[in-house]
Length: 70
Image: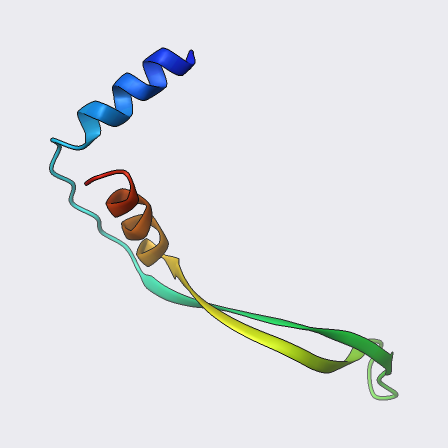
């Protein structure tokens, strides 16, 4: 799809009505450093540096629709 046809599609999208059906989710991201391997299971033990929560699932789609003018 060419850039011109993509722009045309987005411009038409602003006058469209959208029904979104789906599950609204919360995506949780945990960032950190793996300090060691757990003795109970072969998984890393994480020292948490930062946590972020973001909209996921249908909520993420809804935010994209709004960003496109829907």
